Length: 356
Image (cartoon, rainbow, N blue to C red; front, side, top):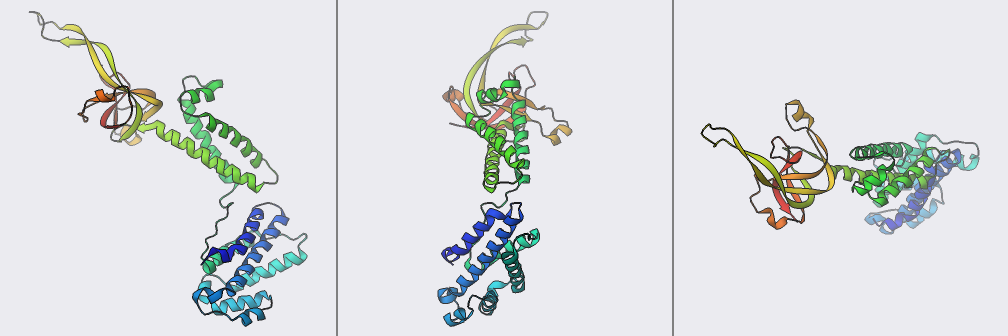
């Protein structure tokens, strides 16, 4: 059914939302009265709908005879829409409406039971769904100081992990993190702004709903951004398959080549050898971890941190890398740890595929 019919009730419910989680007795009373008004408006509008939503409903005369009596409207609703009221007890609505009348007429000094307030709030949401097929979601739903504090704790954990990978850290850790591409200036600004807002909300004696809403949204955004940064920075050794981004280069290393075919005494001869190695120079440093289960089973790959370039192993990949030299690409493959003199980075990558 068109949500337009429910617009009046929704507006009243939104007004209740602005008070329901505030701490004063006045706010609780206003929230409860607004909820009751939303219930009454929903019922009146539904009973007056043309064609009664496609089913046989009360006549205009029957509706008019209710004469703004809440109890009579409830009886009429129960008579013609009992199937839509499954899960809703008319007696509950009557009970809460009597509480509303007491609050309205004797309001000063009275307080609302938190459980009753939440119960009536739940009833009106169900009523909107049953009568108008409207799934009402408050813009304040899920807001709480607990959520802000919990999310901020996650943010600090992510920041701690990011800063742990810096070479210098200390006083200029923020600038260094930005320089290394681990953070960006706008995110740093938002973190600073969020910290000020978080402290204001947490230490407030009377929480402002809009500020709480803003704190929740900002903290969720910052947490998710940092989570994505951490995700892009942390990988695991084989058998995990990873994707990393960087610029391909061909590097030359001098080494010693040992040859057992020598003089008549069969002594080992050695000669200098220039070895060519393909490297991927990463856009941002990464960490490659050894999974706990593999470590416990005796795996030899130890976790490596702050990796800025990776030697490429071409056992799986048969195409020529020459066409990618100097280009920024995304490479999919499996990490493994260096263990011979021909391995020039702490971690190598068995290349599976490359794309620009």
